[in-house]
Image (cartoon, rainbow, N blue to C red; front, side, top):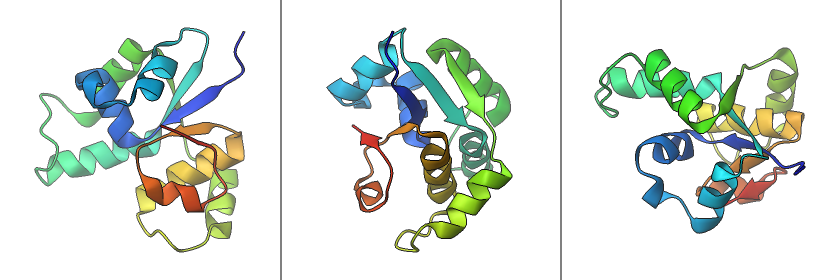
Length: 131
């Protein structure tokens, strides 16, 4: 059994469910691997809802329903922010200020997850990244 555990960033979560062609070959392969555990942050759902509310992410249903459907399709589990994640967040350097990305990164670090993201900003942080 593979011990790799993934945390999908918001874009990757949406792309994997809606348009997998946007994923790198590596990301697509690990997301499709049934032996790999996939997580999605509740922060991602929050980000989806906010982007939907301001018209940046058109959804046919509420973000929570969309995210639940996507997670089921991808066999992904949700991970909620915890006080330990907030503690890690406070230790991160402030080179990147996006609150969603920062919390997702803190969750990945705290939980020992590999973050699946195309965003190069994460390379400057102590988080395992796959793309």
